[in-house]
Every structure is written in C-alpha cells, then in structure tokens.
Image (cartoon, rainbow, N blue to C red; front, side, top):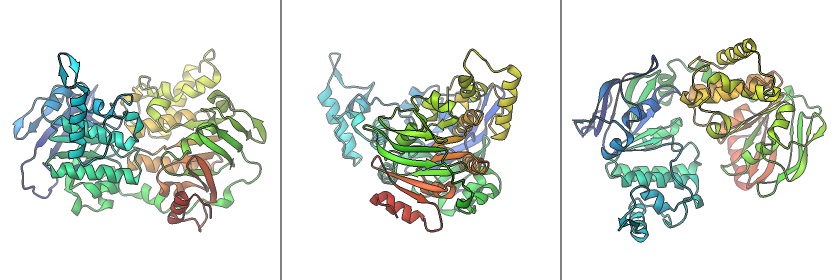
Length: 513
C-alpha cells in the first residue's frame, strides 16, 4: 500500500489481501482497503477496476476467496447483506431500492415498521422519521409520497434509511451521477454532517472534482489490483487520473487539446433530418431543429429541461402530438422506433440498463439485437456473419472482457455503454442519437467514446449528443441547441464566440445570443 498520512484513530473497517475470482477471471487480486471514523474515502478506478466487486465482497453479496475483513479490530465474517447491516455497514446504490409509491417515512422504516398487536403504528413511524431527518438537518415532509420528490431528495432518503440502521460505515455508490450542482451541494452537506457524527463514508464516483471536494483519502484500483491509498490533499488531479488509467494522458490530452469542430466541414445542403414544429403535449413545446450529415448537434440544458424528451421524439420512442419530421427532404411520420430504424436512425437511451441492454443476454446477443430486429426474426443472421460482426465491434470498441458469450449484465458500466454503441453502429445508421453516453463511466472509457463521436462525424455520420457536462458538449459539437423548461430556446453555432460562461448564461436566462 502506498504511504498515506497517519490517522489519529484506528480504522473502523479494514480489508486485507482481498482476492475474488469468477470462472477463472481474477476480479480482485490481493486488495487492501481501510476506512476511518469521520472520514470520506474515495474508491476510484476505471470501469472494470474492481470497485463494485470490492463493495459486494464487503457487503456479503460475494464471498471472498482469500483475505480478511476486520471491523473495529475484530475479524468479521460477512456472509450476506443482512449480516453486513448488523455489523454497521450500509450501502446506498446508484439504482435506489426504494418504493416511490410509499411515503418517505415508510421508505425509511420499510421492513422495520413499529408494530403493536401485529398492526403498523404509522404515527410512531412518522414521529421517528421526523426525528431522523431533523437530526440530519433535512427539511422533508415524511408523510408525503417519495414520488413527490426529486432524485436528489430520494438519494437523501436512502441515506437517512441507511443511517437509521445504525451505520458505522456508509457506502455511497455513484450517488451524484444523476444530480445537478445544487443537489450535489445538498448531498455533500449531509455527508459532512455524518462525518462530524463519526460515520466512515466510502464514496464511489467518476467525478474527479468531487473527490477533492468531500474526501480526505482516495484508494485507487486498476485491473483488480491496488494502486495505492493517498491523501487527497497531496495528490494532484493529473496524478490521480494517471494512476487510474495506468498510462500517460495521451488519449485525454488529445481530446482536451482538440480544436473546436470545424463548422466548414459540415455539409449545409438539405438537412439529413429536419424537425418542424415537433411537439408532445405535456412533454416538450413545439421546436424546429435541423441536423446535417457529418454534424454533431449538442443538446445542453439542466436535468429535467426536456433534452431527453426531444431525442425520444426524434427517434419515435415517444409519439408526437404535433408537427412533423423530414428525413432526406421527405416528410416522415416516426410512429415507432421500428420506423426510425428503417430510416437509418439509431438511439442509445439515457438509461442503458432498463431501456437499452438486456442484462441476461450475452454481449454478442446484445450487439446483434437491433440488426436482427431490422431484418425480421424470420430471417436470422447467418452464424458466420454474426460471429464476424460481433468480433469486429468487440475489437473496434475495445469491449472488456473480449468474450462474446459473457453476460452483459456482468460488465462494467463503461463496457456496457460500448456494447450498446456497438449494437447501433452495426446497423450503419445515418444519424446516431446519444443520450448521456458518458454518464457514470470512467475517464478512460469517456475519452474513447468522445473520440469515437469525433471519428463518426468526420466519416459523415450525423450525431445528436446529450450531456449534462457542458464542457463535453462544447468540446464535441458543431452547434449547440439549448433546452430550458421543456422548450428549445436557442440554436448556436459552436464558433470562437461561444464560451462555457456564455452557454451557462443562456441556459439560466433562456435567451439566445
């Protein structure tokens, strides 16, 4: 383990020599990890580095092959999640296991409701929930249904529930991936309060700046092995990223230093796709948008502004209630995604797990899914063509593991995103719609996807690119469409006059340049 600053207290949790194998693949190899009371500790690494496996070993989801787990100096034998909770380890996952139809109080106490004579004492449950949220400095109506609150508040409710389980160790797995900046600040305020109360927090994130905002230490994993544990105060940003990816930042530097897209390279004849007054009642106000061959159109706006609603209309995933679409000059009604696919459109949705991939199918089966659907199930792809196609995209996108028979649900987030991209690239689309393609993936996979977008556009493919990271939108797009309050309020050429501050001002004010 690399040297880290000494702590004034003993670790509340210590993992030593943790090794875990799956079907001959070593996911963790002799990994050490420790948490101290009152500290936030970042667990970082690329997708596939072993972070999720380490968490699952710690919480008893996976049984370790070798190594030891110690809680407060005493060996702990964690055989399941319930035993981990009893030992004081609680986890809040990126996909929250809460019930939106129940009240906040019911979600906090679910499975542990106060009862008398077998009946739930709802009054006592609400009083206890109010005490908990007040102690943590939150202003939440515990009697309201959870569905009434934003994703950020739901995340806080999940943390309140975890703390109510007498957590000494709190594991937060990508808690900020769907939050805006104000919501992140709210979460960090709660985390600081918990640290003050002596809770040890393991914080898993791909946002480098957030590590330095909230964490005292960082443990870095790469390819299932420990790179080291470091105090964040003495670790430069560039050193952190270099240790994560295990090489100099040549790929990242190439993207960061990439000049703004060449507006002159875009073909400005008839647009490939033109939306005219396209709208969906209750979803998005009427908008016009032109997309040309070889053009990257970035959609910028706050979470919930309507970006996803726009791209779902463009692909026919949602049916419009007004306006129309022209593809290659011909008026087209995109009633369903099947129609869009037939018109050489492709769409990678924001939620790759529930709307994109089929977790129980293999990598190869997921890759050929759209192409096979376009052919019709009565005309299966010949086995030799299917094998060649799958191998081609596994190599081209560097999907890991490079096993077409691997279950896609077992892959890391970045590799799952690559599989979804491979599925649509296999259809050879004229227009590729990407909704948050780099969210929740590591910096190396993000760089590869950004580079792919640049290459596809240079080869003549039109791309619609949605991202909450405005720097990413500006880096990749030929023009930027700004969405605010379910309305497309501006369409801006990404020339030398468009800056990050100017784009943020337009998003805030709703006005164009």
